[in-house]
Image (cartoon, rainbow, N blue to C red; front, side, top):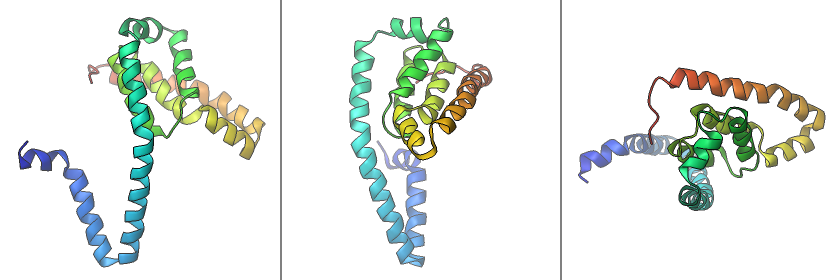
Length: 171
């Protein structure tokens, strides 16, 4: 790989690194704070992503594409929506861990609206998040929020599918 391809591939990383170095020269305290946050985020990602990638690799190999297409593909209807919510409900980790999972779902032929529903539900209906929310805000608030959010997630999934469906989805 030649140097111009490397620079083109990592141009945003290089630009932000350069800006961070300039900021550090101007305000050393802020620069040290920023580098500590970057280090913390990288450590967190390195702890979360390898197990996610291993599980995704196993899922990709062990579960045939036909199952995903049958249960979550174009003809899946309510079952596909329900499975998207169930996968998201039992998900663990931060939102960025959901994107590789979504890529595998796309590769396996899952309907795009179900992928969007899964990603939105990952943010809103995760079991661990719901437990925290019930403890902090109470079960009534959580229940009302879910009653509002769940239909919104489904509608959003179908709207985005309609808007994006004009282009082929490939990984």
